[in-house]
Amino acid sequence: MCTFCGEVEEIVEHVMVSCGLAQYMWSVLAQWCKMPTPFLFSFRDVLELHKFSRFEKEKADVLHAVCPIAAWCLWKKRNALVYKGIPTYVAGLVEEIKVLSFLWIKHRGRKRGLTWDDRRGFNV
Ligand SMILES: [Zn+2]
Image 1: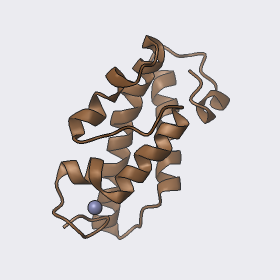
Image 2 (image 1 turned 180 degrees about the vertical axis):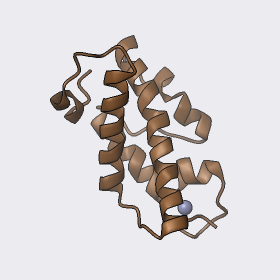
Image 3 (image 1 turned 135 degrees about the vertical axis):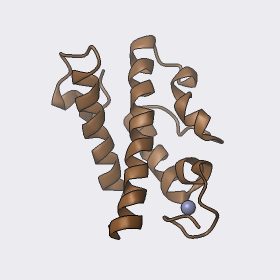
Image 4 (image 1 turned 45 degrees about the vertical axis):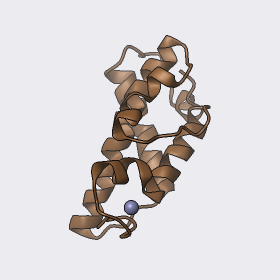
């Protein structure tokens, strides 16, 4: 059963897309990215969200980085709950996604001029 809600079988689509925790996380991230809450039906939709964002290329490229980072952070929270009993709070999860996104995009992407303040409002 799902580690977060305990209501349905724990499969990737549920944990990453349809679980209430995941839906709330995507909703908060969409606000941060200044886009409408996306309709996600599969994990593929998460990975391809940048294609349907209507963002200009540079911003879509950043979204292309944020979504896998979000999925990875969500999976780490799932593992922390399973193996260490650490509960997950969306506010903390989203903040971790913002911080990691900032660090990865600034240092692994070509956005050396990105500032810490830019991270707050998804200003890329
Ligand atoms: Zn669930």
